[in-house]
Length: 237
Image 1 (cartoon, one colour):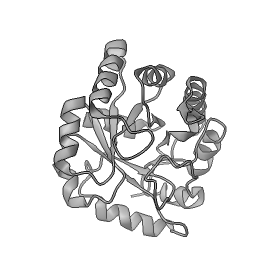
Image 2 (spheres, rainbow, N blue to C red):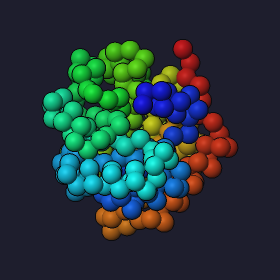
Image 3 (cartoon, rainbow, N blue to C red):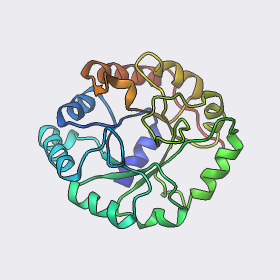
Image 4 (cartoon, helix red, strand yellow):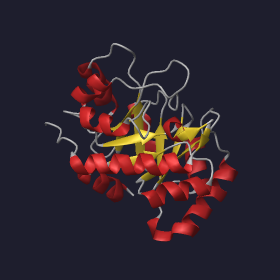
């Protein structure tokens, strides 16, 4: 799986659809061209119990076979033991940590890690880069980064827009997936302004709090078209 994530990182243009709660929506996302699909295991209205997530993942893999994108489980301040148990039970490919997990625990998970950060308002790129540097153990941990909007309560999925100006500066030194307030109408502008490695969406592809087939497809297509026109910048050493 690290090889697959490394290939995504090399070519850029990653699209992740998060907060999926049914195999049908995951299939739509994958067939539209999503590179990663996410399931929430943290407290959230989108939370899925492991037993239901296993059914969902099994159905997804039965439907798509080798075309199944990596399945990401999103956790917030959960113990390594509990996360690894869910990874085993559900058959997750990757875990995404949206909490306050320290660098020391990142190598203890049984699969590759995506680490999310949500810089508070007023943060500057150099401060966020220092935060990332503290969390970076080596080139493989974490495998990918997510930069999200800051929210004092919700660790992702709030619908708030991230600071694109700060993110654009950060993208010059660290490749990451941009999250926070994206939708099919705004994602192309976000890619043009920030030039991230990829994009990550949840609430922006929902209608009345539920995932929307047409919005998922529109988001993936808009993002892929924007990436095709403007490759993510190569971070400076």
